[in-house]
Image (tube, each protein chain N blue to C red):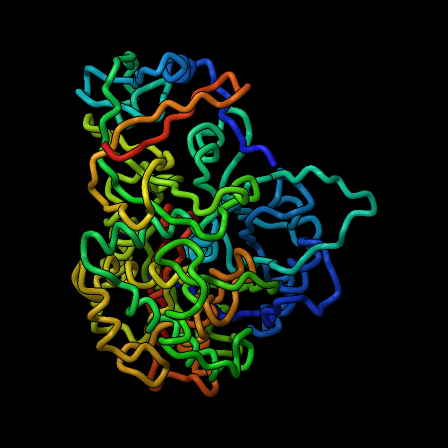
Length: 399
Length: 133
């Protein structure tokens, strides 16, 4: 069942995240084109070889996103896919691209996630489309409009705090382990010049004394939204063999979509990461001991803790001990989010999810510079959309 | 900024009508012997077309909660901290609510709760809040 591992990531593009973008404002489709150009240049492949695109929503249209992108790029495709999995979109795009390649319907597939601000319209419409944020639909008939928004269960901080509260009640207070995740990832960011918090080390005390946002989540447990963008090129073996860098084969994946609002999860403490990861490992035919580094979606520190448990790197309920006894830095015994994670690299919208794919790809291609993990051949990557609602796991591997 | 209020739909109307009378009616699927929240047209999971409205006490246990020191949206900036919560009804389903009449420091997961029917002034709608039982 599943992929044969015959499609590879052959090129990446990643714009430096910025808290205030210094790049000229471009529309989403313009950013798409620039990211595509950069990723193809990285791969050493011409645009005319592209015959597949995978996109998420583009800001300039509410419908027909793949066709809009294809037309704008001037690249007709055999495979025009739309992915709407929030933070899991990036990982979800990668496996879909690999599947299209293995089916033989496309040879070279572009996956891009623009995350820079777009130009302001000359006439500003002051009614926001999503007054309570993109996670909470206020439209008539939306279950969130009727049963969540009126009680203030909106955005991300509150529902992720609910995960952390329940975790503490069932398994013990994870606060210190959460802080250590933030600290180790910051150490990684300090070895990654593109990270938004490069050059700004922190201590566990710094995390624990940062302001409480939604108990027990503190400011330094939470991602920093910023601008940026990322893209990858996925191609078949023939193209991969003549690409510029070491091919990074997509050996396994799993995906699980279970709910929109955590209130309706069957069990808040058994996340969709578990079945997604189990499928990815089974498909790749590898075990946890075979993994050289992990790049785990980290909108919050609690997300990392629960992801490591549910992905099977440690038993349920022991994540705090695992994190406290391991060194999660690039030079440690369990390298995790070596780019700093989104917590310290920055979260350029949905491109934040692609930062984990790029992190793992750079490691396997031995292009990570100061934060290179020695002898890195195999990586485990996750994407997490919504409030732990949509999970994708990938296993990536060099030759 | 006014707090956003729910707009009942044709399917959910009996739930909101119940709250207006300070009673709680939720759906039940006889074929699945399963209580359902939030209101659906067909039973979740089985898609059985047998949902019926039944009255419940509203008694619940706290499943999880947040103490939001920073408001989750501007509409709540007048009254920190917000206490949004997930509660589990005795019948099984969970729902989102907010806790009232409780000291944030005294909130513990699993604590028994009872409904507070809050008639929104001029709102023509009643919200379902919870307090310690």
